[in-house]
Image 1 (spheres, rainbow, N blue to C red):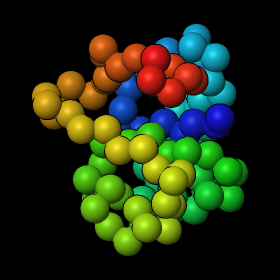
Image 2 (cartoon, helix red, strand yellow; image 1 turned 30 degrees about the vertical axis):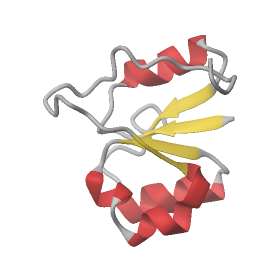
Image 3 (cartoon, rainbow, N blue to C red; image 1 turned 60 degrees about the vertical axis):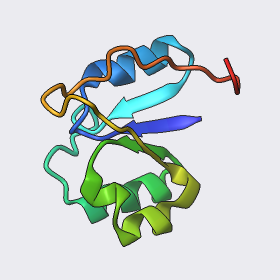
Image 4 (cartoon, one colour; image 1 turned 90 degrees about the horizontal axis):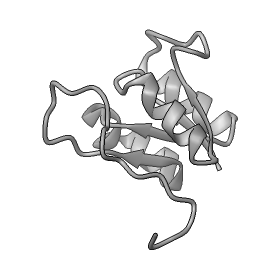
Length: 95
């Protein structure tokens, strides 16, 4: 499973996912910072990656339908927190 972490989330999220055994990349580390949402979505599809974001503009738009199962939207109770501390990565359903 290949994950593309949106720049609205902390780069630590990519490191945590990697430590859990996922192939994960942060947009900033790929030199894609500042890309428009449609460019990010297209890149994720072209690279067969699941886009991980908490960007409501992506999650609530037609891009969500284009991405289909290639989109993971994270709800954030604390919008000021750009990271996802407490998120538990698991490659096994139900664990």
